[in-house]
Structure formats: C-alpha cells, structure tokens
Image 1 (spheres, rainbow, N blue to C red):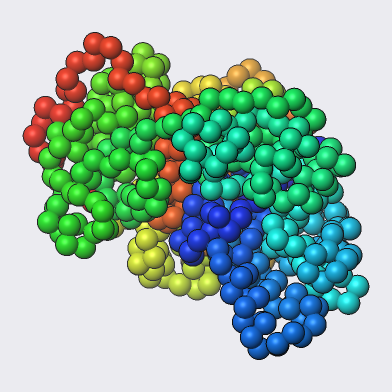
Image 2 (cartoon, one colour; image 1 turned 120 degrees about the vertical axis):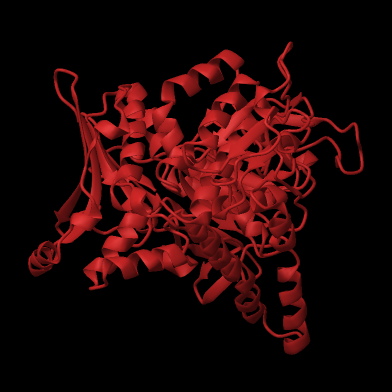
Length: 595
C-alpha cells in the first residue's frame, strides 16, 4: 500500500474492470490480482470493478424465472445482483492473499445511486468523499459492477453493465481512464478468433468504437464515456498495450503475437512453488524448464502437475532460457549463480536480499553489460512496493529518510511476545506458518533487516553501505522487564530499520527495537505486515503490505517476471556471439541450500 502520510496531492487513480470473459472460475481471481498489483506497485490507486463469474448471471436469471414464474423485475434484480456481490468478495480475498491492501464496498456503502427500470437502469450518483476515504488504509477498492441502489431497492444496469459502472467511477473519482480487461487484447475489425487477418485498433473514436466493437463494450458505457470525456481502454490480462477509445481518429496497429517466455526456476520451496503455480496459471505465456531442486524424486511425488524437476543445473538451464528465477536463498550457490546467469545473457529475477546487498554494483554492471534485466522487488518488502516507490520519488526530489518495519517474521514474533508468548514458542509458530526459516537467527538478530536496509539506502540515496556496518539490535536481547515497562505505558515494540541523510551527505543507518505509541502507523502493523515511512522535503509517503509468506513474496517475483516480458514485448532474442553458459558446467548442485 502506498499513500500520503501527510496532506499532499491526490493519488493517481485507475479504474480496472474485470468482466466475466476473464473470470471463469475461482482460480481466475489470482490472475486478476496480478493485474491489480501491476498498477499498485507503479504508484496507482485502483478501483477494481468486477462482474459475476462467467455464466452465473444467466444461471441466476434462469433460477429466478423458474421459482418466480413471471414475478416482478424488482425481485429478479435483487437476485441477479448476488453474482457480482460474490465476485467482489472473492476478488478481495485474492488480493488479501497476495498481500495487497484492499477494501470491498457494496453499492449502499458508496451511495451508488441509479435510476430507471429494474433491469436496465443508469447510474446517477456516488459519494466521492466516502469512497476516496478508504484509500487512506487501502491501495485497492473492489466494487461489484452491474447494479446500483434505486429509489426502491437494487436495480441492474443491463447486459454489460459493469462496463458502465467502470466508466462512471472513472468520471466521478477523477481517474485517468477506465481500463476494461477482456479476453482479447483490444478492439478488432473482425473477431480475431474467427478471422486470422483481422486488424487490431490502437485507437478509436467513440462512434466508431460503438460500431465495430459489436457488444465487446456496452453501448451505454461508450455513450456515457463520450458525453463525460472518459477515456476507455480495452486490454487483456498482463498486456501493456490496449485499444484507446476517446476523441481521437481511428488508427489500426500491429497485431501482437508474443511467443512464450522461457523460464528456468531454481528452487521449489515455499516461494518457488508459489511462483510456479502463477506461471502454470497462464498457459501459452510461459514455457518452464525442469525446476532445480535438491531431491527431484520427492518433488515429483508431491509437486505440482505440469512440472518437471531436476537435480542437474545444466538441465534446469537447457535451451538458453530467457529468464532465470532464483529462489534458492543464501549466499553460497545462489551468489555465484546470480552473476553467471547475467553474464551469460539471461534475465535474472531473485528474492535474495543477501546476494543483492552484497553484490549490488557487480550484478547491476553485469546486467548493463549484457543488456539484460535484473529484478529483485521481492527482496525488500514482499508485497509492499517500497523499492518502486523510492525509484519514483528519488527522481523528482531528495529523500530525507526512510524507516520501517521491514521483517515480517520479526513483526509476527513481536506481536506474539506482546501477547505474553515466550520467544521460542513465537518462533515455532512463525515457522509453522511459513514466515520464519528453519534457522531464524537472520531474522531475530537483525541481519535480514540490515540486508534490506542496505538495498533501500542504495535506492533512496545512491550510497553503498555494507549490511555488516549497520548497527543491529537482536530480539533475543529484548528482556521481559523491558517488555513489561512498555506494556505499562501502552507502547508497542517493533523492529524498525532507519536510514537518513545528513546535510553533509553522511548516511545514518540502524536496526533497532523501538517502543512506539499505539497509534503510530508502524505500531498498527500486524502479523507479517511490512510498512515504510518515506520522508520527502515537503511530504511523507507510507507504503504497506504483507512482507512474508508464500503468496505476497511470489506475487512480487511474478510481477518482476511479467514486467520483463512486457518490456521485451515477447521479442526476447539471444545476444549474438554468446558463449555456452559457464554456469552449466557444474553437472550437479550442492544440495544444502536448495528446497
């Protein structure tokens, strides 16, 4: 979550609409969450408007007709709206699992008003202030489309009514556009599923869009957008391009044919397995090599369908993959592999904060020399996009300081200690939930937070500080007497990383156990949540999200993978003259670090 921590300009806002053409089963909400996360980590607030699952509205109409037998339309409207209510709740759950802060609002909670017939009404009003207030605590507002509150109860907006909801939200809330996520990547001259040489439009005026879209976008939504000056984008999941509908002349563009991205996965522990699940959920977009693991037989017996496993590094890197995803961890094998991967012309995505902190300059040099991408969003913050935020704000103004709760494991453990648990019991619970490693000393002693703080310092100030040179305070030094004294004063202990720049350019950095007032924003973080306060010359920003666990970390890793695919446009060519990969010369991997 990114929001102003002090009064500032309104955040950039985007409305995303997910129709039933992309929501077929409950599994599709995770794919929709990826699309939402792409926008939130780019610094946008998102209103996600959702349709019912594919076929559900028709099924509700059918059962209503069967039970009611020509009953009043107003009663049918009450029934068929349930598909959107269910869908909004499922979307909220998917975002929560991914570590994205979201609020799910029903129409009556937004004063979303409508007028007209029960089954074909139009939206007429919204309580803007009431809706925007939720962005103080969330990055995403999820709203059911297709219906609003009429004078005598719920009314629906007609077939395709969720398009209209998205357009009206964009108008009322001042969003930059309404992006309609469909099962096609834009508007075509003909149906591309049946006409292979159909041309795709880069842009369309409103009248031409109504003529050629043939129901792809609801006519009422196009008419409303034209009268209100709202830009509509028609796009597919995960695609950077779209057909823009607005006050522009029609223009056709190239039809995008993207070959699958070849991916090598190194490691299949908690995070690696989560990333693999995301990759497999997008058939046609990714081609997975055998996954490198310590014991291939065990993983084959218990692993995911559709995956092959190997203990042989050369096999994991066969056929020169486009991208290598390292989830091994540690600073042994993973450290040498990270350099070899970039040196040999492959993109690298990693969640390994220790390797990035140690070899920041060298890895970036190798990436630049080979013309490849180095991505490591998951190394700091998990689902809290702190590095992306720092990259944005450091370009426009000096960062004065950054401080935050940056170790979700410690935050969870400190919460349990505050409830009276013993340290050993709190650690065991964190391990059982997948937040803590088998050896938790890196978290407990502050080494993990120091690695993250060193990376933050590079992005905030462009200065190199070795993690070992950052002062650290260990949880094991937190005495029961100190905990009791804080409790008596109603204070909350947090492990806080702090870095700031002095007027002479010196950087102060430390990891400390700090007793905070209960209403402090960092004190409000619960369980595995991370939170960061970024102080700028004239304002401060707050970034929040889940910082530990399989799904928030896997979400950040997957977002890096998709960013590389999007930037490359699918044209991922091997540089000329590449040597055979040196990192494949070792036939087998040492097994001590591989899940």
